[in-house]
Length: 226
Image (tube, rainbow, N blue to C red; front, side, top):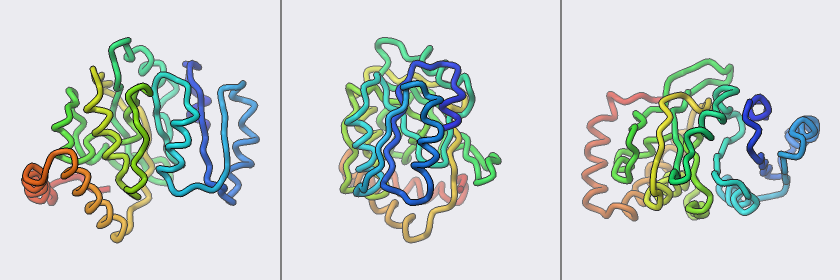
């Protein structure tokens, strides 16, 4: 919330969807809400998981672009939104940049574990989610809902569909977000791999998916982990 408040560009609407948490989140929202001067709307109620909450946010959004930040993530710098707005021309459907991976203390751990392509195309997603979910903004008019059948990797499917529908993707060669990594359990990681395989097969077919996974396995020992 503080990283949103710090933005020099104020041309935004800020939507918070909280899953009826009992950890003091609502108290924090209420305390900071007046500082947003009407640009913040929020709701706290039970949901069916992360992607159900994101779909609620999409349903409430009125702005031109959608940008998702999860709890613990931040907009990278006070002028980041200004740079994004400057890059978002009339024919641009996607603006994306780089993610800075940080730990709980806010210290940089690495960049996104997959190189961000400067000319983003659908085929790049045969390598996995090559753009961090927190580092991509999608024009609302081409963005569908998240498929809640996927519990961990619906963002991968959502981004592929968005890139497929996009007229023009604009790359910002700079950090646009700080992505908090707190580690993923082995059980979740395995489920994520399974979901991503099914998503890739749905978009690219079984043969391209199998070949892509063969290449991923070969590269895995040399890839960045976080």
